[in-house]
Image 1 (cartoon, rainbow, N blue to C red):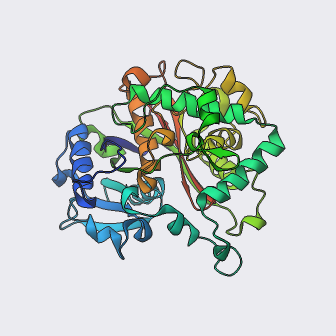
Image 2 (cartoon, rainbow, N blue to C red):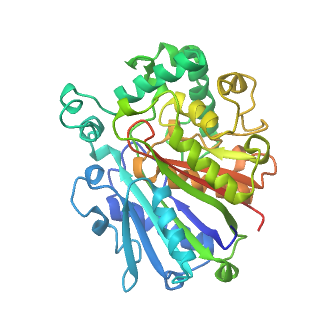
Image 3 (cartoon, rainbow, N blue to C red):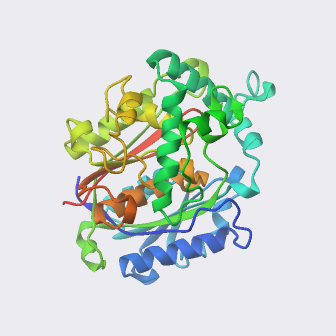
Length: 381
């Protein structure tokens, strides 16, 4: 698939609390950055897709709060409720339909104005699980234990994900938590829910991302080289945690295979040059790598220790700092896509991988990775 490309990206800084910015302020900033990046004006945009969530925004029909700021006046506008990668997928579908030549996609979140434990508790089954106080952190702690038990992954290997990604964030001026930390410091940080320490968990964050997708016959109007969409797919697993093998991510495996097949990739571990994955918790980076076939099962922790996933490694993973260094929930996946775009353009500064031409980005919806959306992007048409 090479009939659409990403031609503009814009991101706000990711911060603990954007106290002076509301939803519309963040979106306005990101949209104008994306338009400037593409060398376009809002008149060059045919339609708009906003990505938001009523629970995280604290209001119904949350998309209405950002439609004007997204430049949707007198344009077709729709909302996707979930991660930004799913919003981008809808935007891509609109391009491939032939009805539109350009689509602007936005995704925003203000975790500082939310109570994540209450919000994610509401995602559980209301009869059996919600009343016992389950939330995303406790559920993911269960998944981490299941994954570690099956694969033999150690707490020290999880901690190395945090060390790597917080360290990578020092090269990203928009990251929330650039830090030089050690494995020992991660393991000594507060235990949030066994086996997850505080530094195994991504922070509460505010931020927004915007992206412009263009049809093949419109990419020439942009000012920068296009980043071509070679494959995109998503898949969803069972809702009830007991109906899944939590130590594996079957939905991600299926989504990744479909996206790689579209892109003509038969050996992801060697044919993908850079990856931005949804590392809401340290174990997830390792688990997702294995599920996507970017490394062999049970081997992610060992390859991490060998430096394979470092910025100067053979497969840099979350060179931007990932979600460990800033996690605006709804925008997180779209930011992963934008970071891959920056890598393939050679614009990642100190986080730049060596001459990447193919990158993969991932977004997640739901408890313990219930739904996954995978994108394969290329600098070459």
